[in-house]
Length: 110
Image 1 (tube, rainbow, N blue to C red):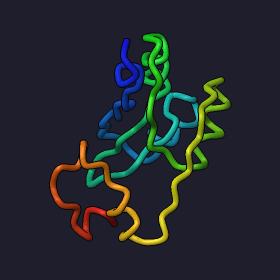
Image 2 (cartoon, rainbow, N blue to C red):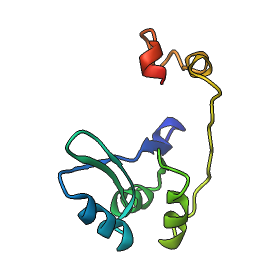
Image 3 (cartoon, one colour):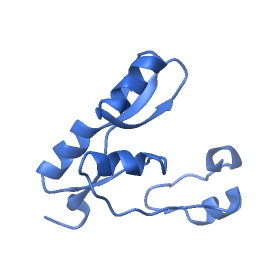
């Protein structure tokens, strides 16, 4: 297996549920983190993380810092990389031309 085949992005589960149901899922250790979108939630589930690890692959998560404690509570221990940019110009400078072929606009970098 090549190096690129050992890593994958953890899929988000799109859910149309109430805020209360999502919070209950977090409390019951079903979800690690969630983001509210217009009318639905994008949730990172414990099941999807464990599914990736069972395939001997490493997962990439985009989660909030407070979700790391939830990962530890479910016995999932990760390598954490915290990225903090000073402004949108730094994000534009860090873009990888392999993945971002088009020009990154100011709005996208925000």
